Image (cartoon, rainbow, N blue to C red; front, side, top):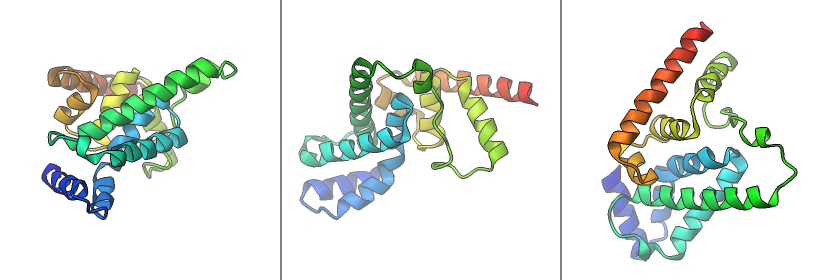
Length: 177
């Protein structure tokens, strides 16, 4: 995927706008889930995803060949953090608990109601960083190395966080049985 993505990015940088469709298809999940993990609002995460691609398209030459997926995820995370901080400052009427609700998985993963409840239970026991790592790895299909680059953390920390999150999920699911 990385080689294909780099070829598409080079084509886009050389002026081939049709390469964007391929870039979008290969990166949309990771960009979306990076924003969703911060904002916990699917529609707002979609807005941030659009803003991320718009920001990249304004100056595609700014990207220097390293890890394009991590580059886009970093833009998405920064935009999401800015949006979160802006909303936190200006929105005094919303209850803090409603902001922490787990977003519905219905639109992103097709599962029956029982499995959906188990997935939501499993994710509810994780702290935000653990949830972010689990979603990026399992849903956005990012490697631990890509996640580490996107989050600006050492790969060992990501691996440890992922293992700890899985242990929490297993414990929660055993209690549910």
